Length: 317
Length: 80
Image 1: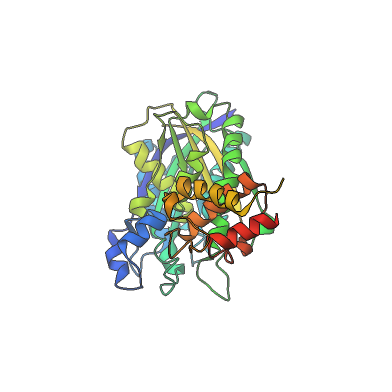
Image 2 (image 1 turned 60 degrees about the vertical axis):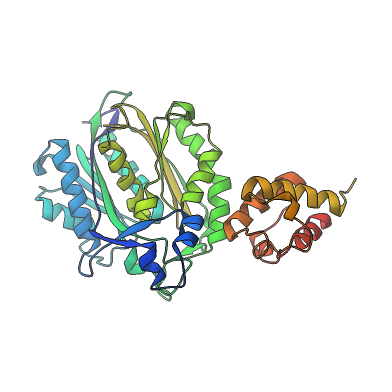
């Protein structure tokens, strides 16, 4: 049976224990705390253990989201994982999550649209639930970017971290709680701007080009996300963009008409850029902080490699 | 009427003050953005974007790397 929409029921996240500070980085490459903080706004990031895989982090975040939902493994019939850094291709990460959580026979999909992956994944779960192809989904963003980081490149290795975030989503007929229709797309002419490719298996990006695109082209797309949700930017309780670089986040925020009470997520300061994990990670921390009222609108927006982008408005669980 | 070099420098000085907190007294054609005015690579993008709006010119990313000094930027903008 189909329903009119889906809603976010609960959140969860996981970050590895090991903290890598700017001070630690200054011992590996030619950099300083002052240089990193002023350029990208990051103070520290979490680093996965050598033998800790993307799936391990995805499982921990998913388990927490499932526990917080009050549902059991038998209640979930879809798993969608957004990741750009999983080294294991088959089984995909979603199947590993399904196995570890003891799910029944869920649809299990990995999505790769780099840093916008979580929003694409959430849109797929939303559509599957609307169509009646799934009843209740776990949507996860999980990354081990430190495994695709060039530790000799001082301009990029200061940026990245590891972690995972997850949400449980289920059907609803209440439009006031429903996830809004996704606004998504890509910029094919800019496909070479951010790369992790076979010849150079590390994240390589044209920083200035990405910065210009993000700070000048995204604000109108974010306004479109709000418009499709029938919510004014000034009515948002929180804005959780991909945590790419604090100056990008602030550059985008400057162009949007948020109210003074709107919380703009800046989890990047303590987590670094975790690609598809950054939005669910920041969202989970925000929801768990209790600073956003249940039912209040939160705008999610992912953007990055591809270049790709996607966003939607959810209601705080 | 085309702007004079002085007028462009003055316009750039306003932009530099606003986006990068540069003291207008420090801005002169011979000054290097990075070495003298402490404008980092991302702030340079913000300066360029603001300059495009203010002067109605296009400054592609490939060109930004060639704009080492305030004078370089003035010349590029004056060319239209």
